[in-house]
Image 1 (tube, rainbow, N blue to C red):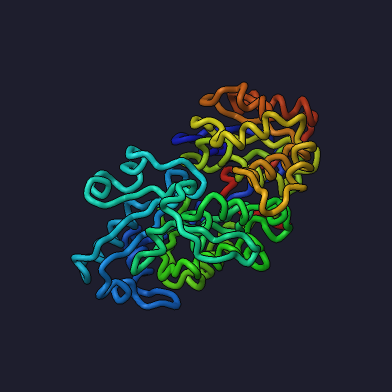
Image 2 (cartoon, rainbow, N blue to C red):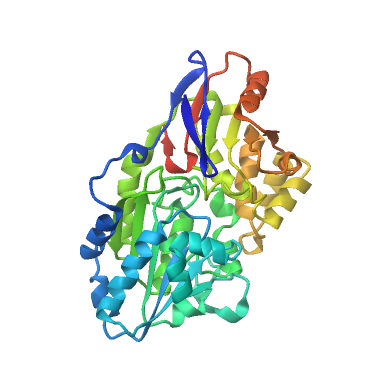
Amino acid sequence: MIKIPYSTKTLKINIDNKNLKGILISKAHNYKVNESQEYIVNRALDNPIGSERLEDLVKNKNNMVIITSDHTRPVPSNITMPILLNRIRKVNPSIDITILIATGFHRPTTREEMINKFGREIVEKEKIINHVSTDKNDLTNVGVLPSGGQLILNKLAINTELLISEGFIEPHFFAGFSGGRKSILPGIASAETIMANHCSEFINSNQARTGIIEDNPIHRDMLYAAEKAKLAFILNVVIDADKKIINAFAGDRRLAHEEGCKFVMELSSVKKIEADIAITSNGGYPLDQNIYQAVKGMTAAETTCRKGGVIIMIAACNDGHGGKSFYDNVSNAKNPRELLERILNVPRNKTIPDQWEIQILARILNDYTVIMVTDLCDPSMIENMHMKHAKTFEEALKMAYNIKGEKAEVVVIPDGVSVVVSD
């Protein structure tokens, strides 16, 4: 019996021993800590890496902005945000604090989602604003990225006296790792800036892959954006399969993030096991809410599944496709190969919305059959996007065996976004 996260539940699946070649699990899932989540966060804030303490930074400041992740990220802000606010106000009770939600290119976070994320008290008492990447009135140009794209960021963040961020670090399918600099780009960047950074040339780079930040052109742009925004301090946590904090890193935007990435790499690195069928998930809620996000989990399966194999993606997708441009471009394409070739010829400054996700999905669909397992999404939406649909895992496995044969070798990645699969 193998447990797979699905929405807010867990699916229990069975694979015959004669087919099962292995299970790839991040060590973070079984990483045990004796301290409370609050203690771990406070310890990190008491021992910042390459930076003054947060309390020293907020002294004599009139205002500040705290960037936080949006509803698609399982950052335990109900733990971290109260600690940050308490520590800040203890030394500077009158400071004007704005919490800026780094939506990137996503839709705004709803009030209900804010309450679920922060708790009702913070939502009712604090000033919380959604970043909107297309609202030119809220944006300002602060320079040019190393890649040549315009660096346009949220005015609130640029004009504040002190800018800090909270987030979490996990493997990321083209930025190497989440966290740190990503709170700026794409977090509070304009649509134009995000699209320049997420261009087809960079997405196609072999360095723009899970677990890689060295020589990663996307990471390089992001670091530059964080520097230009004067991101003064970060608090990034690492979480387990239950979304509980197992470690935290605070301090300098680059140094603290790099230390966190090293820790995550040690836990999440798994050796690939080649198979004909790869089963994966997006780690359940909130990352498996739509097809757009589910592409991330597919990339873990892509690295271990033989070309021409089958990827079974278990994701609720209860929020639908996750992006109109994403859906329209994939569903209107004649086939994945045609779509991929078209995107690879798009110049850096002509990137379209969601092109990066379209490109990666097209890359996967070009080499694999993808079966999406969900009973919470319109099957026709999935099928229109050149994937197969199964209402249950058992149905999907039967379909996969019909394609690859009853003796097909199977590997399972219970949480595809938590691992770095390497040779």
